[in-house]
Image 1 (cartoon, rainbow, N blue to C red):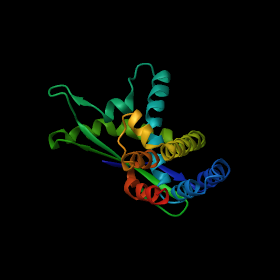
Image 2 (cartoon, one colour):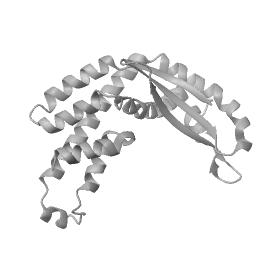
Image 3 (cartoon, rainbow, N blue to C red):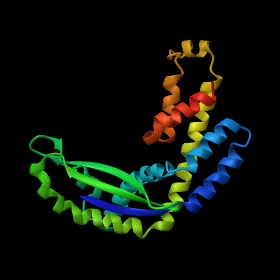
Image 4 (tube, rainbow, N blue to C red):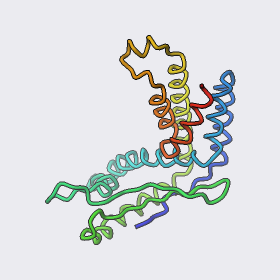
Length: 209
């Protein structure tokens, strides 16, 4: 099953994030450049997907508060477990595709891990569609939630880079860390965007050597 759960206009989000990067990191040319590059290509949509994962939990809680007779509908459906073997029934994948320079489309793909469970898709389809309606009718709230999340991710990545670059060999030894800085640069890249980690990692590594 493949469902489009959100179309997001990211033009205004990028504009606000570029302003934030310019003001917050103006004294750090290299890192500002890395964050700007990240903000202005499609990888920002991955952060949108992460935020949707957070919204699933928020939606479940809000839905249950208004519908006391219904248990958490989305998480309980997507991550259903077969009671006979205690294994997860569905594989859930969030993906995205580019529509144009201003919009992205978030896709939810749900497939049964075992073909024998394919009929169970009909059971959760209605619940997923309710969640889809919730997202589509909450555009303003979505944007208000997304921007602070992106700012936090950018600040966290910056702080991590800054601290690692200031460390000396003695610090690595004292903290019992591996002196191979590559490991930590990979963690920074993952913090920003795990989908494009290799590319971003190389960018960070090359500009800080």
